[in-house]
Image 1: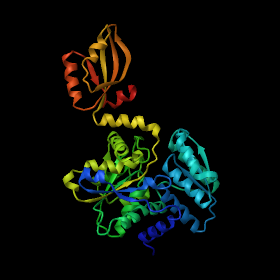
Image 2: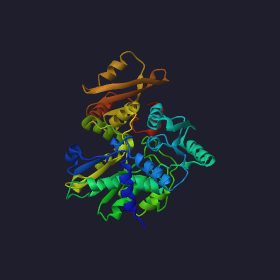
Image 3: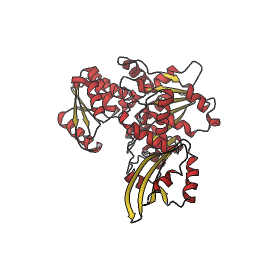
Length: 418
C-alpha cells in the first residue's frame, strides 16, 4: 500500500509541470526582530500567488488518472481556490465552471478569467457564499460534473502537503525545523503538512494560526469535535471559514487547543503594512497570519530556533489598503475616534484645536447631530505619531471641561459611524 509520503512525493514531482518549487527564504528582518532563524515559505510566489493551485492540480491529476470520463469540473470560490482551479483547467485543457457570489470584486473575477482563458466559465450567483456553493452543488449533480472542493478532500490535502515536501528538502543541510507556523482556514494545508512531517518522523512543533474572528479549528479542538461557528468575521477572507473541513479535522484532531494562535484582525493589518513598507512584500490578510503569530512568542522562547513560516498568499486588492492602514493605526494606538459634546458658539473649534500637540492631526471632523440647542455631537478622528500623546490629550480635554466618549474600541458604535 502506498504511504501518504510516497503519494505526496509523486504529487510534488508531477506539479513541476506547472511551476518550480516556491522558495524557502531566510528573512533577515524577522530573524533580527525575533532572535530566531525565520524562514519564509513563499507560496505567494506561485503562478497564482497562493498555494491553492497545488490541491487543485492534484485533484485534477488523480481524477484523470483514474480513467474517469472527466469533461467538466466545477468549483465555488471567490478567491484563491478559483484562481488555482482556473489555471489548472487551462493546463489540462478541461472545461471548468466557477461559481462566485454576485458581490465578488471585479478584480478577482478578472484574474480568474485571465488564468482560465477560454476553458473557464464564470457564473455569479447569490449575495453570499452559501447560496453560491449550493448553486454549484446543484449544477454539479445535474451536469454530471466533478466538484473540486477547496480543502475537504484527500486529494486536495495530498496536493497541499507538497508544501511540506518542499520545505523538508529546502532546509539548509544540517538544519531542522524546530517550529512550523501554518495559517488555517478550512484546514487542508495544515492537515497535509502535519501528516507529511509525521510520516517522516520529524520532531517539529506545529503552530496553527487562525483569525480571531473565525476560530473554527480552535473551537473544534476544545470541543473534541467539529464545531460550526454561528458568526464569522470575513476580513481575513482567505481563512474565514465557519467550520473546519471533515477530512482535515481527522488529521488535526489530536493536536491540543494551545497549538492554535488566534490573530487579532487589526494587529494583522499592522503586520501587512510592516511587511509592505520594510520588506516590499505584498500579502493578503490570510498570507500574513503566520508571520503575525511570531508576535505571540517571547524572544527568550524562540531565540536561536529555526522557524518556518508559511506565507500562504499574496492576492491583495489594493482597494482595501485604506481600510488596512486604518486598522493598523488603531491597533498601534496612533489613531482614535471620539464623540465630543461640542458647544455651538464662536471660537469653540479654535479652542479645541489649541489643545492639540504638534504631532496630533485631525483626520476626521463630522457633525452627527445637534444634541441640544447649544451643543452638538461631533465625531472627531485624531492621528498622532506617538500613542502616549493620547494620554496628554485626555488630560487636556479633562482640564478644559470637554465632554467626550472614546469610541475607538466600541465595535457597535464605531461600526455605525466610522
